[in-house]
Amino acid sequence: MSNKEKHWDKTRGLMFITLALWFFFGYVVFMFGESLNSASFLGYPLAYYMCAQGSLLHSLLFCFGLQTNRKLLTKSLVLPKGRTNNEGKIYR
Image 1 (cartoon, one colour):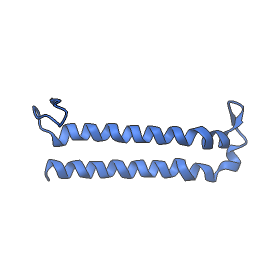
Image 2 (tube, helix red, strand yellow):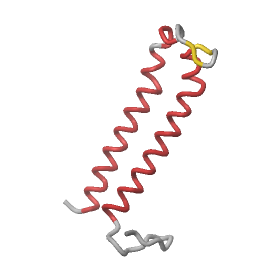
Image 3 (cartoon, one colour):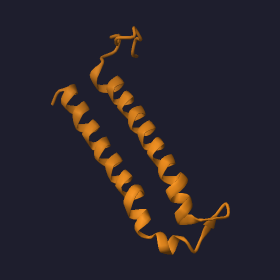
């Protein structure tokens, strides 16, 4: 298997993990909103806080994590040592 095939296999795996976590935090957590309202965080019911702040925070963290992992994969699998990318950076 070539480096490009390994790269896309790992990238696909990262995407599926990210989509599964997005689904969990975007839908499954809110299915239990009634039971989450019994707890509070910063004076607000926990379900309200998760809707207002938690889902946005998770989305940002997932996007940042996915992009960071894809950059690491690209460095390690696609570009061999000493080769530069479009910006002229040398990967070591």
